[in-house]
Length: 399
Image (cartoon, rainbow, N blue to C red; front, side, top):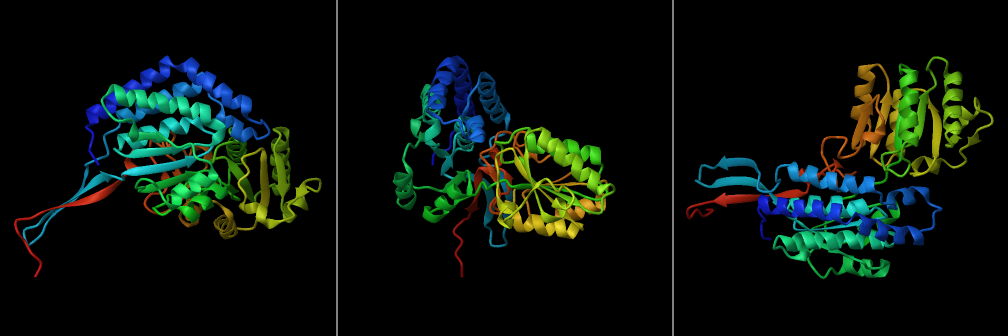
């Protein structure tokens, strides 16, 4: 693949920022077509689909932030001079062609493309049909930005295939694919894993947990729980499950308090049998499989545990490997929790809503990876490269 200079890449990004700003009304009109066709029964998906002037500002901001970052291509990872005279340099290199499959978020069309392009990759954008008009105009603007700077449109391509066509494309791609990132629910992820013939980097489900330890500051705990659960239900970093140590002081009163606060905010709170013995009017969980579900709704589960070990075990058995929080003033307890919980991001005394590229200092993100290879957590610019060994010799042969 031809390596584009950093100067040319940044010129394309400058053009795209200008085009987004100049075409606000066209973008909003296209998005309105999508919204008019969308059944508003899924509030979380509707929140992801809608584009506003504020969201366009965010798109421009994402591009500006990526433009300010160092070019990740060609960075030296290591050098070595062997006794046989070979000079070996390990450097970062583009993946090649990345495909991302995502649902209902037009801003991903901006963030995914800007990251892939700045890292010198081609990207195939397979957005959901519910955002077709929005995604189409954004890709058209990308093409204008590329052409203004003498580059072909093939660097950023939109795929409008249906499910069957996508399945066939994954089985028998018409061009070489180096990496696929499915960004959505478990059905989408399983679909891609089943049919893809290249590497798949999973942006997994949320289903995030928060554990209130017996040494927690209750006022802080309430603040964090309410933010993580209600601030943005459509986000994969939203809170779904709350565990409270039964040995906390004033346990029954605190259970009652958090249940009432969640209910007042419109959150449907399901409880386990132990909590139900205190909150007798609450709806008891009938099937333990619900502990594995990501809700993306004003809904959560509230359970009781007797120890840190029990909390860690329950989280590791049920979470999506995304984010988990412990509320405690005990640093040793917090560190044990953070070391033993198997998630991409673990917190002490903070909301899971911070698991986000921009919030974690990475900048724009392609996704939140819950895989352990080749990267875990926010997939930012630096994570969209692989590596390559350069070996310089002078006629050496292996004997």
